[in-house]
Image (cartoon, rainbow, N blue to C red; front, side):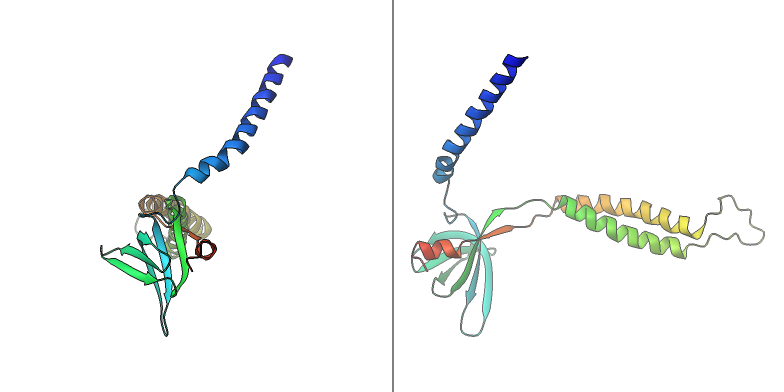
Length: 178
């Protein structure tokens, strides 16, 4: 047993040394953030207006950047007018966010439904259901409709994506492109 622990520690030491040695060189070989096809968001400021455009890069030069926007047309921007240049680093799904929003909305709707529920029996009508307290009606409805809302919200969120942006304006300034 003692010999196994030494091998385990040796494996950890070699693995951590390899990670710290090879990771920067592997990352340096990766594609540039502004290679053609990268998803970017450009904020351009002219005299009186501010415009934010999202597209994919076609070309990045020292004096301009060319993007292919959502309508498929290429659009050029002078670097002198670019105030902010951001690159999308990932597009995660919004499943948990949608489930949380759906649960909250469903719970509020369910609580409202439970609060307005009438649990009295009309005269001459045999009551088959049990009489619950008002608090039980509110909590039960909020929980049930909240769960249904969470399932629906999670399903909708699974098909929705949002961008996580990294500001690269400083990178352009360091490369002399700004």
